[in-house]
Image 1 (tube, rainbow, N blue to C red):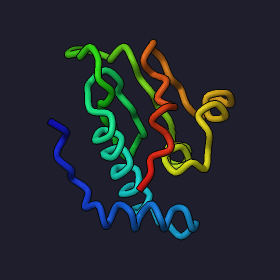
Image 2 (image 1 turned 180 degrees about the vertical axis):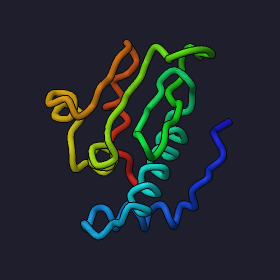
Image 3 (image 1 turned 120 degrees about the vertical axis):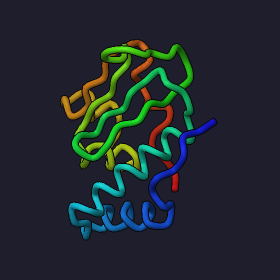
Image 4 (image 1 turned 60 degrees about the vertical axis):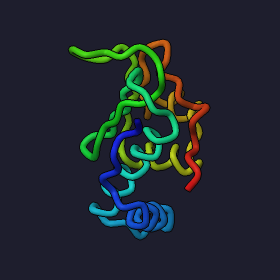
Length: 119
């Protein structure tokens, strides 16, 4: 069962649109990040990869072995602007990983086939 949505999809799409137009305030950015993380978890349900976008949120996604204690073996971590760029297609996975804006560890951490997320 996919995780329960906490972000209203309409509000989430509006926040992503505001970010894409360069008109997002801090609250919009946080809403956009949380909404897109929830989208990722909906499209790739599972617990094998943890995607972290501090301080806005984190989600577990992608089918595979589940971890229960400590740091998960597959982690993707980035900042809010990079995550939203990946989620919208404004930034490519290869560029973000290549220049260090995304830190991905573990054999399942390449989530590039899931990006960008379409609204």
